[in-house]
Length: 525
Image (cartoon, rainbow, N blue to C red; front, side):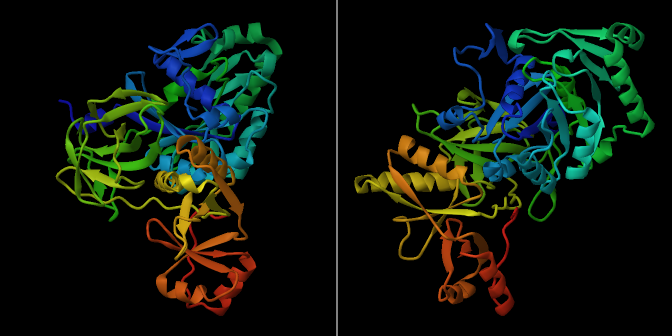
């Protein structure tokens, strides 16, 4: 019998996090190749039924900068399971978007560059995972290039991330001498054959250890000694510690040439937990077989310039979703007909007729929906709020063409609802010159690019002197507005933020006026 819980058991919903240039987008495309969603052709991977290259980086600015800015949802079959891959922004300036995406996942793959190891932005994104208690699988990429000592990389993961790395595969050689990997679980050596630009699934040759030792010489001796060392110190996989976020299985390979892809995908099927009951705002789990419910974790507009529509990405949390069903939008209590429900792969869309816990559905023109909203049938639910990050960069936005004021205001509202930046409005000024608050300055580039290219609203973003934000209340706001070096503005959700020109002035105020409400936002620093 097909039930939500039995279908959920077939699902694996996970994200990929990495430092820019670690190979995340390449890894994503190779997953689709191995999942049969993409076909190979002439050194480039193409989407089936499409002449376009299949890439998760669909936004024009992403392609110009060569980084992931938005998050993308990709579903594909593998190993008898349904894998839902939520690709995330690779730059720490967009870690708030990563945080929202992780609210919809059950695990994450952390991609490291074999020659660089842990980088600052990797650490930032990892902390986002830790905050959400997300199990992490580590993939050390680009092993077909000269790389650091693998034991050194393990030490770095352990020391800098306070995470126990457990190698499931171990490399034999690196760079041009990369021969393959030792499967620690299967006690076999897997020799890989290079394929041109990784355009086809990599052939694998399975060798017993004796044969590998005779054919691989010194490279084998060095690798096998390292494996013996790992065995002697008890580096073994423990599922409970993995699911609690204390331990990470580690795989070595090369996404570009498909080395190690099968091992990594098998791990997502065998190790990553399937969707489980999601706790509501009162910490009561919503059973998988309860009536339908979902959580909105992302809003994205203008993904397709031909349609100019707005998509709310929703993870199914319980029950069965059926296209056309009328659901209740929790915050407003309004009914919403799900006639236009899609699965979304970058800019590619397909109508989706049903979905189960762990799946992601794109609801088109869900104009009242916001990040964190609950959607349900029959049995109401409210999810814990998705917190906002502490902004550290601020700009005042103004249109440079007053004839485009309407488009400017519409664009600012849309980008605010998507969470591209936090938009703050001062009393008496409002939408004429809103304050844009961001985790990182690259967010402002996205705002300016999208306002000008999608909404036809040329803008100037003027620098501000504020450096620190705190959540305050109406009573404290009246006092703060009378002080120098402080500005109080309202977010669209009604939250009041006090903006300070100096963290030292903030510290002094906190010391001199302990009665004032000045609460931190999450992920500060």
